[in-house]
Amino acid sequence: MVFDTMEEARNYYEEYGRQEGFWIRTRSSSKTRRRLDEVTSRQFVCAHEGKYVPKNTSQKASEENDERDISEIENMKRTGKNCSTVKCGCTASMRIKLDRWSNKWKVSSFQDSHNHKPVTPERRMKMKSNRVMPKAAKILTETFHEENLPIAKVPSILGGPHIGFNNRDCYNHLRNVRYRQLDGGDAQGDILWLFETWLEAMGGRHLVSIITVQDLAMKGAIAKIFPNTRHRLWLWHIKKKFVEKLSHVYFKKSKFKIQMKKCTRSTYKIEEFEEKWKELMKECELANDDWLNSLYDIHSSWVPVYNRDIL
Image 1 (cartoon, rainbow, N blue to C red):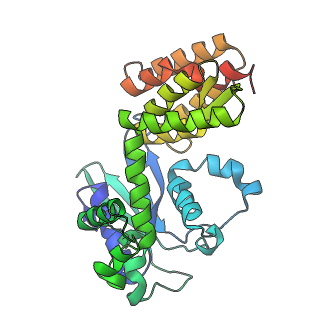
Image 2: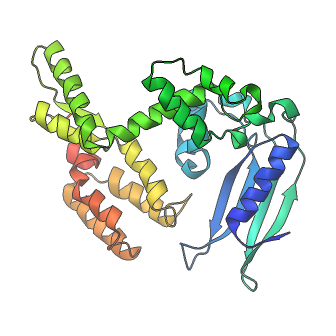
């Protein structure tokens, strides 16, 4: 089969999975050596692909497979599910490759053998690929919350088991709404109140350092309530943003990813970090990237070498 775009191929395989009773994820991507920003091959697999490995033996492996597993594992933690119940070594997959002559994506391999039972038709609306919360449901959820009505009633009102979302999705939507509000200035009052209460409970003693995600409201509140506290940013959260903002160069086993890790984590002198950063920006032609430049402006808050003198 031939597809005009990579997204079209993924959507086709995802729809096929819906009909057959399984959901999919992206397993890997390949890029050319000459042009690191050009994807030439991609493999989609059944979500049951791979095998669960206990955390203490898979830490290194998980760091090398951010693009593949980060969203799935986070979702498992939120829902309280054990990853071992999902990954069972299924080999079903579809690989596509870019044909340079036609500039289209062709299916180069297709495996349709599953080693697990498919999701039954009556439960397929609850599959991950079908979990969609329509706009009307989101508006109704927010309205129920504002009027102090039971949120659990929303799914039953809009169709019960015949819709692709449940009570948990409603509460997750409200949580996401709250996170978006935290990005605005009106959220700073709530954070100020929280920190003032915290400071009072600690008898007025200020923290030596505090680590948070990158958030303007949080930054302003900490500067006001804890002016003498070192405010640091969560390195793992910064790492996730690399995947989102620089996906064209920050992929599995890419030179940029490897060198960036060495630059930020394996430098023990400030001068060494500064030198490696400049070399990497020049080598990868990223000196004019706005997001990277803004991240460099606050490098002392997230690069470990600047915080080795504090706990």
